[in-house]
Image 1 (cartoon, rainbow, N blue to C red):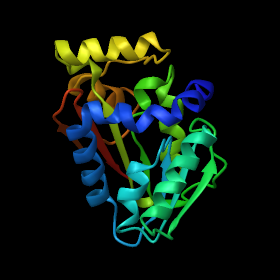
Image 2 (image 1 turned 60 degrees about the vertical axis):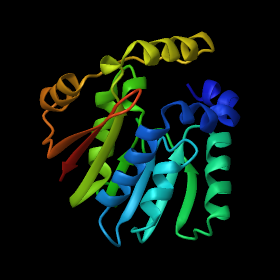
Image 3 (image 1 turned 90 degrees about the vertical axis):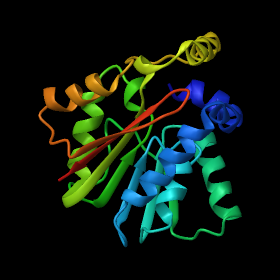
Length: 202
């Protein structure tokens, strides 16, 4: 997966504009859900929009991804915005090096649908969330798109993008229930490709 994202890091933000309303609203909402003064981990951060949104309230944000070119773009955005409470590191979402309970809030946005075994990532994300902390998981709901968005997804697939799960609000909720995690809330952000924001309070 990293090689695809390395190759297309330059194009990622342009592609995100095709679903701009949902992406902007989801990042804003995640920023609101981050507790004030939290130590935040953002996994699969891409070019950093959710990390940047979290930085407004967080004490610190560790923005991580498997792709160095993605993180380089995220770091450039942080510098342009004058944010000094964000650091960047390479991490594998399915095998985090951080100790148990390291973070007050953990974010993994728009990645679970890409993974063949998202439950592995979920276990790691939950592990590093501190007791009393919050796990925030926005994910695209490809199973709930219209014809125009379906065509857009097919274009992405033509250049090598593939997703493993076409979640709907119902199947996304069932994913947590099946794996035994306490889903606190599931908010749906409308858009060309809607986003479901799952919130789990530990």
